[in-house]
Length: 236
Length: 277
Ligand SMILES: Nc1ncnc2c1ncn2[C@@H]1O[C@H](COP(=O)(O)OP(=O)(O)OP(=O)(O)O)[C@@H](O)[C@H]1O
Ligand SMILES: [Mg+2]
Image (cartoon, rainbow over all chains, first blue to last red):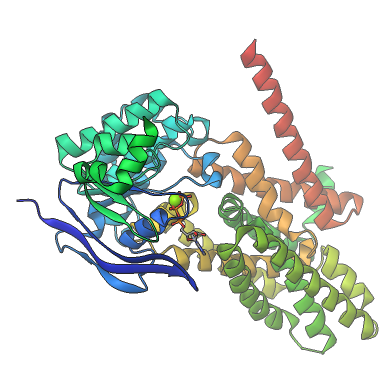
């Protein structure tokens, strides 16, 4: 039923001589909700860049199913400080997600604009459409970037820490939104997060990165595993 | 006053300065928005210093066309500076300062040691109103056509790469090429604008209009357009002032830009106060 979208086989990543990830294997199938957790510097962002093809592995290989074309993948990067005060309207930002399906054609078509509108509506930010991106709050900006990611791809979303800097209520809303996209629209999710409790609550698979020994499996298995037990007993 | 301005255009050097300067202002303003937003404005400054060094050395060595030597050197410097800023943001800042001060020092030393170049040094450093040659004007025209075509046809890609390079790359836009093209075009703009504006001051043409327009505009497209318009108007006013009162051209243009920026800041403050009431 569900097909394998991405399969990583014994991949390693390193920067120059610094080895970050060693011999990691996991796979993501369509409809999956995978959470990548791990401490700072464990290589979560590096791995997402690897999956997106921004960084090539030093060893092993990442196989993408032929079904998954480059315009099927949406990406929500970790925000950079430079972006926070960027003078652009929300609409301009959202529609820039359509660029990957434009190829060399320079201008957006009616269809692109409609899709941008649809996603703006889907995330409930119609009232922000003509506002300037830099005048928005962190949570609103994150929604705009999520709308852009949805414009870029409707099969797989890769989210790098989508809830950093958001207050608890907006965080909860964001999680609910992502869950809805996964359950209702069947979009596969790969999300990087520091929030292990929420990860376990929403995701169906967990990848816990650790240089010594990483864990990959279903959420149930994770909670029972020594690694998961450590975190969940600490939470209590 | 009107008479003096019409008289101004009777001199062919003024017409050249006018056309060349307008085109350089346009190019610098468009490129500037992208450079400033990407936190690359130091590159513009670095390029102008390297340009000065190259120009001074090649003049001293008796090159018949110093500009032809300066162009490739500055283009290579653009590659280098871009690489440095892409790789490490904090150290990049320092590295650019190292490169630009070194180029400046070498240029000044070489020019000083070879005899009789002092007036040239002055005009390279601070610009000169009579510096635009016929060839420079043609060069500017070609450059601005290239830049305009690029910004119209690749506007959406330039937006995407400027706003979020990682996202652009992840979704299949070749961001590296765009950075390169922008750096090279900036290098060319700097070299040709340097003669009139002076290498100490040319980077202001890249930075001021972008900063001014970013204060008042909320959309990327309007930022671009306003930046170009503000840049050209400031240039024109500065040039006229320089002609009427004999003030240094480059410096006058920068001062006009500065006054515009201050004016906009004041307007913005007043607006805020009114809205709050
Ligand atoms: N461009 C780079 N050059 C060199 N080393 C890097 C680079 N980017 C990351 N690293 C190193 O790789 C390791 C993993 O970084 P990465 O950003 O993938 O971690 P992360 O798990 O995303 O951390 P965080 O939770 O802070 O986001 C770190 O030790 C970091 O120092
Ligand atoms: Mg990270």
